Image (cartoon, rainbow, N blue to C red; front, side):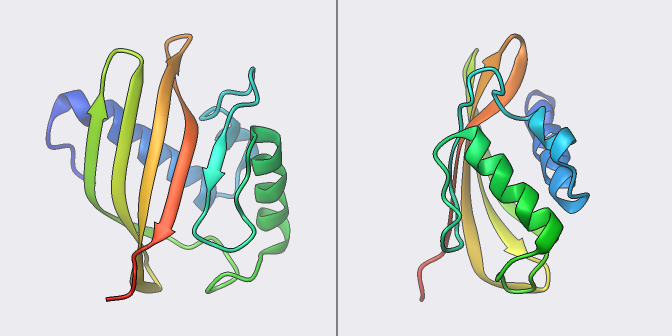
Amino acid sequence: MQAKNDEYKVFIDFLNSYNECFYEKDIEKLKRFYDLQNNRLIYIDNHKNNDTYNLEQHLNLLSDFFKNGKKTESGDVEPLIIENLNIFYKEKAACLFYIARYKSFPDPAVRCTLYLECIDNEWKIVHVHCSFTPDK
């Protein structure tokens, strides 16, 4: 992903680093992207039975997925192609919206929204919503 504007670079780098944690299946690195202190995260996933309503649930589900795989299209973490990244932010809040495509099966695309808050001068994800695009 190329930074179109330096003011968005922090968010583009954030998203790229976040996705790298998934590719590396690194729970410890992944934790730094979340509000651990308050156990805050609502994660609505595009796969069945993966929605979580606090951070602990989400990390447990991911730990199991990283260790055992699951019934996804490939059964493993899929490399993503990110398209149409839109970034909206104010002083302490940001919203990233983008289209993600799994590299091995690009259709249907996944609509992704990440809501971030700046907590103790660090951006943290507090909400994620992913959903497959509707059938055409």
